[in-house]
Amino acid sequence: MVQSTYSLIELTIIIISLFSVLVYINLSKNSNYSAKNSANYLELTNLPNLNDLLELEKVARKEGSNVTLEPLIGVWKFVSVWKPLSDKEDFFTSLLLRKFSACLQLSKAKNIEDQTSFLINNSIKFGLLQLKFSGEGKLVGNQPRLIFYFDSIELYLSSKNVFKRSIPIPEDKNKPFFLIVSMSITNSWLSGRGRGGGLALWQKS
Image (cartoon, rainbow, N blue to C red; front, side, top):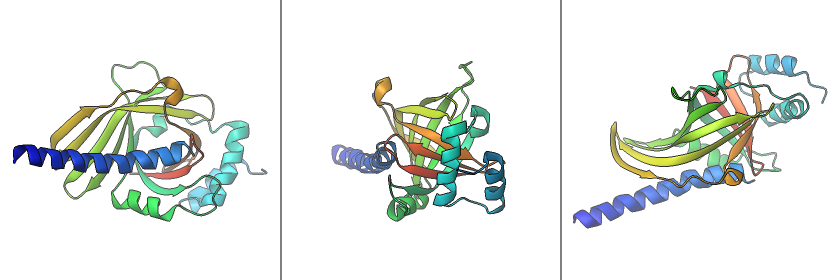
């Protein structure tokens, strides 16, 4: 019975893990605007829509989004996801991410002096269960590029850790990343485009 129960837990973790990983892979694989004026306008209208983000992306490609690590520190909740070359929100994926309270958390590491390096957690919740991926990342370039990797996976039942396992760290050329498209002037929302062309929008918790 112990062996059977353990196998069921393993299977549950694999299924849930595949969901989170597939969402990340989906994002990672696949203007006359003034940067200052557009950010001010979007602040008044709450969250940006796809057209707003595309205009901001044009500005970021030319001028850079100039986002630094400090305003990125915190917990970011997934709001919307758009597939590459699509003008419609990926409704199903966005709904699941919101339903499972998908969050991206960036924090400073006390033993890391580099001002562009950070710790990263990605988690989803369902009832008392929480699945969390943990790793490290770094900001590179002017736009900039947020490069990261996960090296462990944990499962919590309420606040109790019931499972933990290491994840192989990919080679640098295979690490996922997001190009930071824009951030609101009050740091309330963040948008980024993944390695494969998917676009995502987060709201700060």
